Length: 197
Image (cartoon, rainbow, N blue to C red; front, side):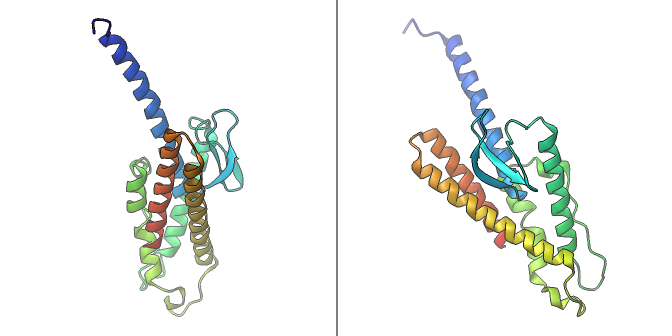
């Protein structure tokens, strides 16, 4: 037992914790992208091995571009698109002016579970309780139809991601990788449940 070096063991544990923290950050970024409507492709990044995502026709790796401008531009585009859809879907029925949905920088940096419960559940819930034809007898606008199409596309993407992650978890022999796939599947399931509310 005299060969045991406490400082060396602490250093090893610190390094392990840092690696785990990087993995958690990567998983959280991927979950947030899925919640914003990005699609996980069946391709992997040649540099880091993480799955590639597609958003607005552009494929990118969220891990390699985490500090890059394209990832932040995709986040900004997703946030503005979500705000636009929420603004069009949410209305009080008496007034013709839509109520904008406020989003803060802090809300986008929350954990995926909080984001799924907090931001994804409120606006769609209100939008579904009122049918498009009930708004003062008006026909649904093009933006409302686009919002419904966006929700359908998001649902389809989440189902596809959930299926993919579950299949990958079943196929892999690496328990750590399986755990990551199952975490991604769980986040997709939470987002899907929030979309159903």
